[in-house]
Structure formats: C-alpha cells, structure tokens
Image (cartoon, rainbow, N blue to C red):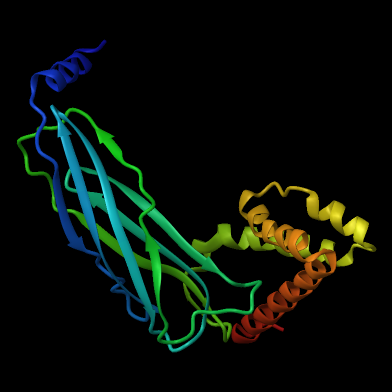
Length: 240
C-alpha cells in the first residue's frame, strides 16, 4: 500500500462522520444567440462525508420551451453538473424523430431530462473545507428543424447520423423483403449498433402485438417520414 493510500485509510477511520449536506442551485440555460430552446430547472447536490471520503449524488429536472418558431425534429443538448466536492458528470440528451411524424412544435413546453439516480465516491478530501461553487449548465449543441434548417455544427451530431444511416439501410432491406418469412428472418437479426437495434426493437414490438402486416406498414411510414425530412434538408441547404 502506498503512503498516500495508507494515510487515506487512516483518516477514514480517524475522522468522524459529518452530517449530510444538501445544496440546491438553478440550472444555467443556454446563453448562445439563436438557441432554439429556453432551458430552466434546479439541481440538488447531496453529500455525505465519512472521514475524508464523500459520497455525492444529485437530483434534478430540466424543462425546456421551443423558442425557435419552428418545429424541432432533432435536438442534442449537453448538461454539465459539478457538485461542491468536485467530480462531475456530462450528460448528452438527445431526441431524434427523423423517422417519425412528430416534432416539438413552437412554444411547446416539455421535460427535457430528469435525474436517473446513482452516486460518486471521492477519497482524500479535507472534510473541513466548504468545497467549490456547484455548476449546472445546459447548452443546445445541435438541432434540426421541420423546414430543413439547422442550428449548431453538424459534426457534433456525427454519432446520431451514423445511427440514422444504419437504421435507414435496414428499413430499406425490410421493405424489399420478398415475403413475410424473409421479412421476419431479417427483423429478428440483431444490429451491431446498440442504438440502432434499440430503434428496431420498436418494430419487433409492433410485429408481436399487431402482426407482420402492421410491422411492414410501420416500416413504410418510417421510410416516408425519413424521405420527407431529407427532402426538406436538401431544399434548405440548396442540394437537389
């Protein structure tokens, strides 16, 4: 055991357990000009100190309003939280309805994200220090609108576009399947991308509940929606 590790272990037993502390701060919304979302919320950081170690957790709910004046088809938001004892978590919040006939309409208010539990443990702190000022910042990284226009840098959503491509190719394969037997064999195959396979899982659920024709109908609708959004984007960016 290293000298530092031995010191940490000694202090964990030697120092008393301090009372649990909690601090609540507002979430700082996106200050960037032209941001399509107005984000608000609060986050509560709770720390329990044991000797020179601390167990930290956070509870939050973020709400948002579409202030862009346009329907939103895709949004990617980053939320950074850092508690009084440091550490921190970076949340990637995304919503993509490229394959759906749905959008976040102008002025719509909705819950952007909620805490999902969990905690972090830190060692070798000074339990008598008050810590740092908490940080809770939410920022829109990228968005696509129903009219085909966009906000932010496209490169920020590269992972989403890769998943879209995998889903789109798979939907075309399902649509081209010559009969129901071939369709079902293909539908049962797990995609290598977990994100893409999670999307296709909704099709499997439709097939189980409503039958193969219902699932095939869903495939055709999703392809039509994708084609409509793609045409809008091509027109907005001057591509034929």
